[in-house]
Amino acid sequence: MHADAPAPLAAAAARRHELTRSRAIQALRELDRAGAPVTFASVAAAAKISRSWLYTQPDIRDQIQHLRDTTSSTPAAAIPARQRATDASLRSRLTTALERNRALTEENARLRRQLARALGDQRSARPQPSNNQHS
Image (cartoon, rainbow, N blue to C red):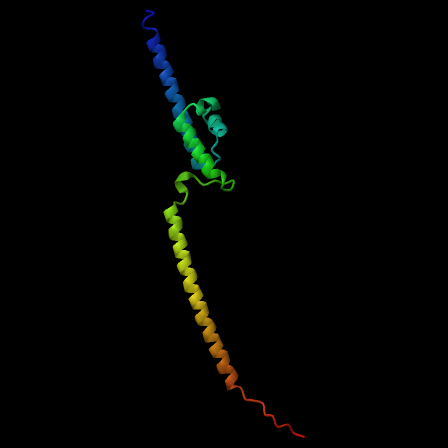
């Protein structure tokens, strides 16, 4: 029976490893979805696993570092990854804003011309004071 003993132990270790991985990934997703800071400490605490184990998992480590880096430059209320704006959407919004700015600048210039014309018409419609003064 000694020859068969390592197989059940190995299977149990593999199951424990997969369970730990799934808890870590779930904690990572929940933290990101909630907009909470994603760090090795926060993932380890949420998943109830050790930080050192997280560092040994290249894919999970990369995800944590990516999310930590992308949310560290944002305010305390970080936006979950799925809700963050893409470069394409930001470019589209910028283009729209620039077009709107150009249209408003043109409208402003047109309204200034109309105002100047109206003030000129108003000024020319006023009776001119005579230079003859009564002595």
